[in-house]
Every structure is written in structure tokens, then in C-alpha cells.
Image 1 (cartoon, rainbow, N blue to C red):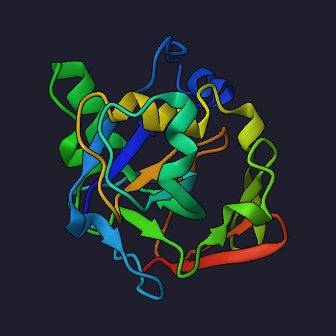
Image 2 (cartoon, helix red, strand yellow):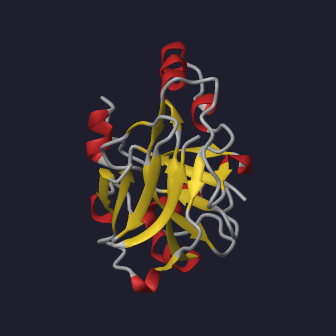
Length: 203
């Protein structure tokens, strides 16, 4: 199972990070041990002092495909979920300054929270999926799939040029503006529309 994460797929997030808006999708990988199973707390790691949340729609691939044409990409997934891409922002900044890869900032154990249940895509308007993240009952992020620079089908087509997508692979599709830090004791709650998808306690 692969965890594929899309970077800067919302223009407002790229702007808040003082980064350029990409002209083509950019992605990075997380190992399977990064997956934070539903109901499992996120344990704040001792190697960072600045962990950030990034709430994202997640696509679950349900058939094998390589070099998938965009017009056929819709055949390779049937469910949409929600997750968090946790980022050690201080380590990421150090990596950027040194020109190093970002794995230690993005791919550590437990850095990919995921929901317990996914929603059948036939029950959603894929061009108008609203989602949100609350930190301690305060809304900190709100997004809509309509604001994504690259659509789900475009992302699947692009990524599949470089690697075979397999059943069970997860694509985290990018985060909107509003990313921020977490502290021990915080509770993060993610929703698609009015449906709560996950609750993550920070310990």
C-alpha cells in the first residue's frame, strides 16, 4: 500500500506558504507505517517542536492501473475519505535551507491520519466536496474540491505515469489554507460536509 501526497494543490495554501503555484502536480510519498489508524492518538514526536496539521480529501484506489488516461481515471476509485498530513514544519524548513529531501519532516511514523469510513463517490458531487477541520471545536480549515488546482482524475492520471497504482493505495489530494501547529492535549476533528470523518487526540 502506497501513501501518495499531493503538494500545493490549493492556490491559497501555496500563497500562505510563500510558495509558487505549481504548473503540474507535485507529490511525495509516505511509508505504510505513517498511517495513523482510526481511533489511535497522535503522539507528539520528540524530534520536532512545530508539528502542523494539513487536512486533505483522500482518494482510495480500488484497481490496478498504469499510464491511466484522465478520461478513464474515474474508473480507478469509488470512495472518498478525509485525513491529515502531519508535517514537522521546523524540520521541513531546515531541509529546504540545506536543499535536502523532506522525508524526515513528512514521512515519520503516524504522520498520515485517516478516517475510519470512506464515502461512496456516487453520494458526492466531486466538483463540490466541502470539508473542514476543527481544533478543539474551533474551525481552522475549510476547503472545497472545486478549489483544487488539479482534479482527482488529473492527479490519478499524472501519478500513474510514474508508478503503477494498486488497490488500497491512498492519494492525499492537498490542503487548503489555514494550516497550523498542534500541541499536546489538542483534539482534531475532520468532516466532509456535516459528516464527521475522524477525531484525533494529540498526546
